[in-house]
Amino acid sequence: MTLRCRRKRINMNKSQVKTRDYSKFSSPSFRLRVLYFLGIFFLLLPPVARADYPRPWQMYYQEPVTPVMEHLYSFHHLLLGIEGVIVLTVGVLLIYVTIRFRASKNSSPSKTAHNTLLEIIWTTIPVLVLVIIAFPSFKILYMMDVTPKADLIIKAIGNQWYWTYEYPDHNLRFDSNMVPENKLKPGQLRLFEVDNRVFVPVNTNVRVITTSSDVVHSWAVPAFGVKRDSVPGRLNETWFNVKKEGVYYGQCSELCGVKHAFMPVVVEAVSKDKFDQWIASKKNPPQAQTGG
Image 1 (cartoon, rainbow, N blue to C red):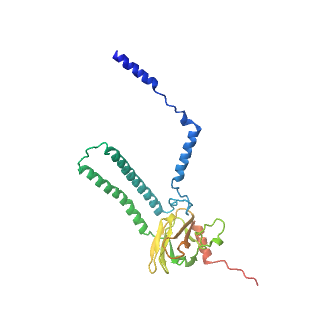
Image 2 (cartoon, one colour):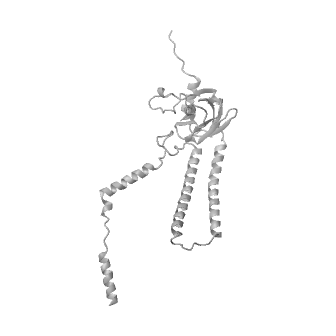
Image 3 (cartoon, rainbow, N blue to C red):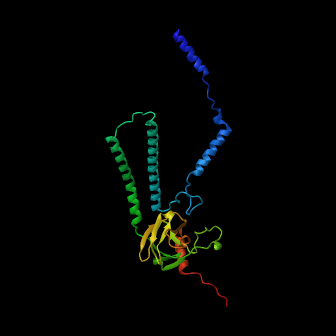
């Protein structure tokens, strides 16, 4: 008799269970809400730069075009992954501890003060993380500091507030000034365009020697992974090897006076044939015709 009653109760409970309606998930309004949410999510993600100059609302690096910047880019992703894992782990542990050991469930808290195994773990893991970070960072520092055999040497001299460039091997020297806003041509970038660009050939080791004639400046091109201070009375050097033709923009990255924001750096990477043509045009500038 008791068994029959139990079966009746089970059958009654089954009949009272409502079947879930999943049709709402396939409705157009639900799909629209999902698409709206995904659109907002991807809009808030930091955009990946696809250019050689800063874009409006850009939050990420420019596209790397040199071996140094490629290594810096990869190292950044490694650090970002490690930091993400650490933040996620700590967050999960905090939530677990807050819920598991709350006062309402632990009227008499534990008196444990030490745990040898835990202390070994939380000492060993940070050491291993630092070792993982150390090896690629030392490699990048060595790559940035040691200049390989250069095929082209350029001297960049910082002035208030423009750059002077010299090509010692080609007996060439010129000044590079920012183009004023009222003289910009269509397609030229405000605060970035200059009257004389630096030309370099692609797939060539370029050694940059930089100094200053007045105060401390800094020659920097983000797409190259290059930033080197220009100090009066001192020669600093760096290098780059551009793998892709294009125009790359940078700026003085050291506060050097009231017009600090108006001394951009523009490097145009071209083929070796075009570079030779540019050198020839600079050595033999076109003569102005005079009427007689």
